[in-house]
Length: 594
Image (cartoon, rainbow, N blue to C red; front, side, top):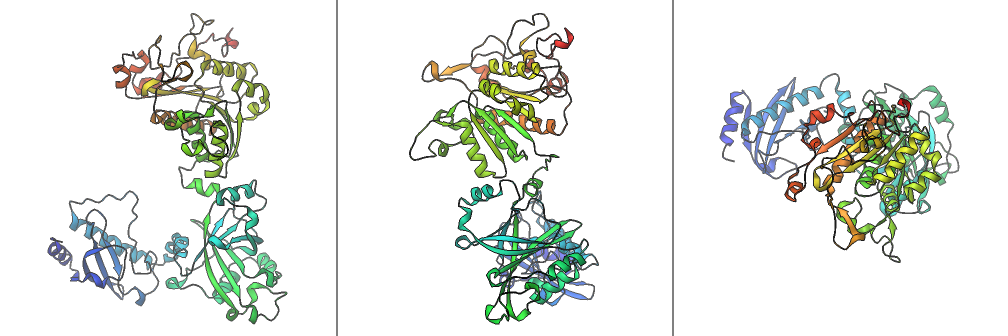
């Protein structure tokens, strides 16, 4: 590095005792270091030796700092086993590569702040923040997949499923809906292939203070028993005292729920007693065993709870399970279905009359693997069924029902389901059928909101119409009619394409006609649709606006087509006029005015 003298000069100006050292002196394999420096720093009465490692990629990555003599001091949070100082998160970090000396100076200052906060009176709060991630780094740790949707509040004896061939432990609430099928879908195996063991789930009291294993040295069994006894209520203690197990329950599991102000710390311990040292193997209390008779293995828990996983997204939440019907499983409808599930919709009904064919591949969320899901039969698989299979394999918390039928038949046969749904989304791109659906909803006084979603050709835009959203003013027919002539149907007034143009094309004849648009266009429309759906379900939209996005019209104009006047409106104007499509004397939604 050609500026190492500048580094030494700058840190000397800060009155720091700095020297260059060999990169071999940094006892870490986190990066390939090209230079290394060492600073002696006094914090309180402690003399710390801080090493700065300059990675090969610096200054495009941050420097790494270590406490060389970290084992000589008290256990400090955010200091890892090799002395690495976790002084900054990588998320959103901007490094000005033109100022390498400033980068090093800032990294050093942040490292000192990390060390000082870790030696303050509130250091236990810092340990709590990283408790579970550090637990994962303990020696000999094994992993448990937890399917508890909510962590129990009472002591429970639970069953633990084990599968040795891929070192898997699983815990779940047997009362959870569809839990067995969810587990079987995730691991692609029969639950009967797992063996069953016994576990104890122990909720600790609120405000329990549990210190992380000192310097990553796993607790002894004696320490574990002390932690539990000091931090449980008298009622839990009584129940725990009366528990008895036999040698058939060996090995057994202990799971601790440690409530903190920052959330629940959930961890596990596998206890393996030595049967040869047990006095009574037919009846014993696992937490009364002498420490010399057991082996302890830490268990890190991977949470598979839907609420926990959704919390890592934007945090969409609904007060109760929502039922959404999606008409159309094509390029837009398929993407809508997937994104609804990712947003937390747990009950989805997909209706489509078409099969999935190779022609659909590059516009659809389904790929080539969906063309031939069975070796016995080729082709002729319904899109609705394939979407159901794909979603339930990828996101098994979802409950998806598929209907391989025409929407008109579905409306006729499943009126009760339509009435009970929280939302209906139509991505059919078939105005005649959607006009029938619109009329059916209004004439039967169904209160379910309906979203209509469609694309304009060649990437010029897409649209989402909200109807029946706590207001009768504005419906799908309004788009195709005018105040002056409400008995006739005209071209869609929301379209960004001027009327009286034909956009369909064919490569194989009349039976293969289609309108050109890309997967990106359908993705944009699907995203707008799902965002709108979430807002409706959370009561965040008033009335029945029409929402649109505009694309690049170059290809459209290049082919000699004409844009509508609406395309020339600004984004602000489109928003301002979003309810101007409403026809007061509409034959469907304007009945009250007649």
